[in-house]
Length: 241
Image: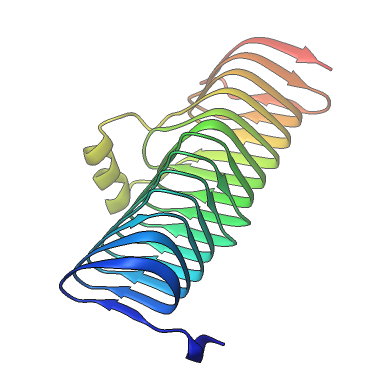
């Protein structure tokens, strides 16, 4: 029961040991050595954890780093989160910056800031209006990307994939100033059932129904049913499967 677990509250500069806690609340500068199992994790200061983390919810408004793996139900990042291992979750929202040196696994991902993972990203729903870099496969049942900054993935796969250029907004201007790159999705291979793409550079696109909107440069498109091409895009080769 949570009432039998102690709270770990850090307001100054504190070194603590890992363990099982009800609430971990960091307002100052904290270092935790060892694995942490908690109900809630809240960081509004600076927190470094030398170990793995398990918990029900985490909210990062400051700067947090985890040297191991992290397994959480819900994650909200408004500051900066760095994870050296793998990150698994049910729901994740990134309004700040998240970097994962392993892989991401969850049900729902919403990116409004910046997300970078060296490995794969697996989810049921992946929604992005910020910037992301996936070093491996981005795989989700539904992928919705609104390009407010440059985005990259090695491969993309899903049942429904939609990529559109984001409209003019404060977020658009801010991300362009921060990342200084074009609003383009760069990916080697895209595979799905229903695919709609704008401002995408890809080597291969394979799908059942494929529509190439404006601003795309694609070497090969393979479609089994419908295929549509915007005159403002370039497709070197189309093959009907």
